[in-house]
Image (cartoon, rainbow, N blue to C red; front, side, top):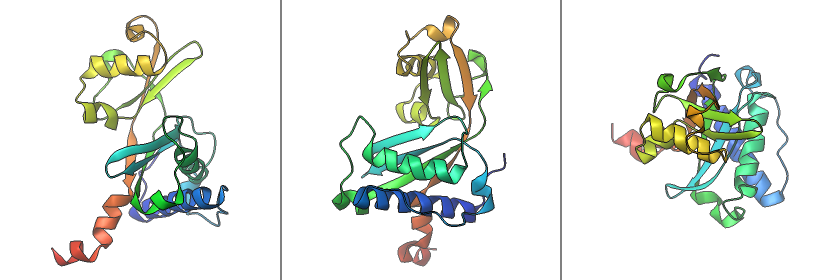
Length: 194
């Protein structure tokens, strides 16, 4: 799977923003016309909403069941309205929300010693229990490899040492597409400061 070009990244962010605005204002998903070809590839993704650098919602799909653009449209709407940790986003919040999309690679089975903090996201599973953490999470919390594995197990509802006792560990990498990065390049102040 190739990294997305800058134009494809911008198109993906536009779709996420369109979905966010439409679902919050009208409680429906937008009609999507002709997304770029690269966004038709089946890939997992997470959409993270932040308000003044604080998490405001995050929903994703690890497995690639549908085209990337459709996954991002649905996850943006779900992050805004259905993240159980937060009340639904209201229209007044929309100007203050920043979108980050994490486009996932395919899952790969790994041993605990192969996990690289800052590079890998993790999916830990045992039976019907599953937990996922993006690679950004252990970096934000300054976790080492063992703590990252423990926290992912606990997110799955498993004992924190399940990674040592037969739980399946799968890793993935992400391409982070962040709205604030493109906004910085587009702002007049950024252009004038070069």
